[in-house]
Length: 332
Length: 107
Image (cartoon, rainbow over all chains, first blue to last red; front, side, top):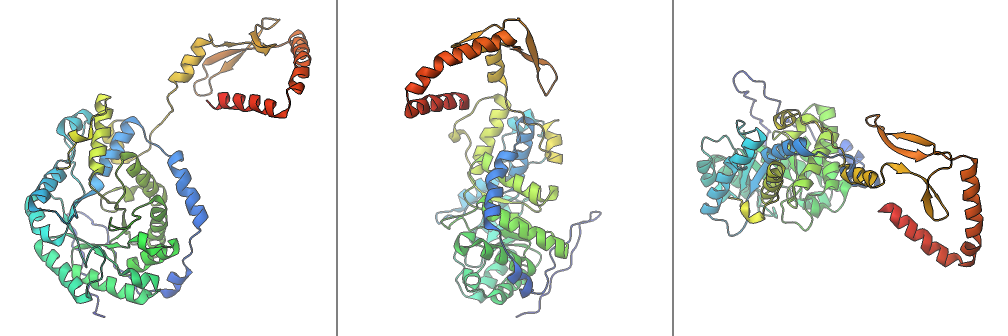
């Protein structure tokens, strides 16, 4: 296993940047002690949407915050440069200007959190987003199955970073979780983090493949111990993607890791969030379980594409009182 | 609070349920409710009413009939008269009535 060299933090001039997750040694005792109270967790996620709501101006604000957290994604076999460019244009200006003006938010630079594409289109996206401050996230390490040779995975990460990706979404080898081989999972995650260098790394756990919530919790913990900046639910290609239940499990592990080490790790649900009222539920979980800072794009992202159209519809309804048809809100 | 302020602070803000239906129903009944005796709403014997206040604002919400001994007597007489037929229709029929009542309450 290579010596882990984490690049030192370089805060922007005059601003204290929060400490990046510096990782820690694999603590197998901690991993083995992880327990999940499944029925309590299910009860919690069943009742939370009924206990928390936002209406009117508050709802508009929360939805705009959600927009700033979206990683606008296109991961299809038929992607082309043209589609990626259109998506980047949408990322720079996700909500129509007249709606933003009516909300009194036109002076804020509302953009999405990032653009998420396959390696092939990283250069295109970086070029299209030039000057906008929106980072490009590349999916990597043999996305979505993650079963290519380890050295190929590292080369893919390095190639994406060279092309200008500021964020890398890696997929873990689910076999390590299913066979309980935590050392192997830890080692591969450390290698990925090292290959990323300054780029931040999101660990995709593919929770739909992991079968039990205890596996999800343990995999979350091991990836954080190995230096993940974000833990992410899914590739979007599994049969079950993001749910409120896995969200609760994963954010509670984030909280446990934060309490023990002081490092803040971000959370990203991906796949299956297409309605504005769904994303609000995820925001409630983040706020209730982790706190205010975890509502910002630094610590919360949503992997989505059509969600943006539904949010724009809801905002237009808030402003005009009428619902418009979906085809008036194209994604790019 | 403006949208911009909510955006910065991410507070939940107030989220009251809309009360238009409830207010409309009160208006239809003139916000006055008598006792239900012998199949009809009746005005109380003493013509006395109790004021019901809205907990959120303290404003008067409605008037509810205040019964005296004569109202109670009338109710008991009506109930005795109805009891015979009620017992005769049998368990399943009584259950149907009760379910219908429950559905009306739920609505």
